[in-house]
Image 1 (cartoon, rainbow, N blue to C red):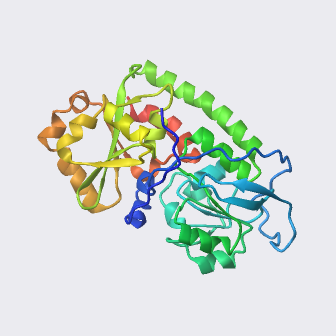
Image 2 (cartoon, helix red, strand yellow):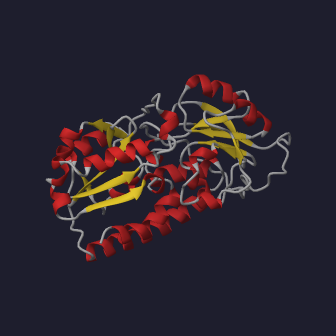
Image 3 (tube, rainbow, N blue to C red):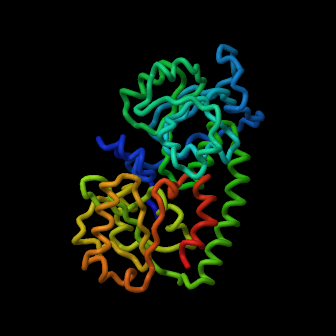
Length: 331
């Protein structure tokens, strides 16, 4: 199981990671925010014409990094900066602004409509022009956070928290908690059906899995608590290998490894996340021709599966899509 610690990593490679889905941000976890008893019907992001100058009811909210903020009980104009925009969509919410580069190539890209581009890194002037009444950001940089708070109430949000926790927290923030609960209930049913189908197709209880991807510069990563790993390592799913479990216990989103030790991380089933960057694609091809790779048990048994990294995010929209795609992938 994934540990819950109040830590999060950011790297200087953040810009390129935004093109590589699950590698976008470093690891972090969520602490449960105060319970919200508000039951007002939500309209977050659905009435763009609502003026932010109108006085709205507010409530106190403490984010997972310890910031206590007065936020609208029913936010109308949300600026969202994070890689899991698909979470908003399953709640029926559209933000007024986001970093659209994080949406390009995603399975839900066509569902994102009338949303302004905030740039990457976030453009403060553009954010100010949108007049948001709530800013939700995955970035834990305190300097940027301070700047954002001068525009609107700002919450640091742990986009790498487990889906069942993250979606409830987000639903609470945007006054869609009931919608989040209902979606999760249906998702759990569909998820159980998917694993039953995979068991019938030969996936055995207790089998392990590993997720690998290359980054430009011939850098090989094994995924921890981000992206595809979140759906694979669910309770009834595949299991992490011991070294990957160690990374999960340490709340690591991913671990850079050398090609020579890939066998120590490789599971009974291996998933390769294809990068859109040619240099990384070449590294992947070279790996798959190497003796180290060809000698792995999963490779010998034909238990290797490839998918575009942009289609393996851990957001709710992608997770729902993967429920249909994984049985097609694992045959």
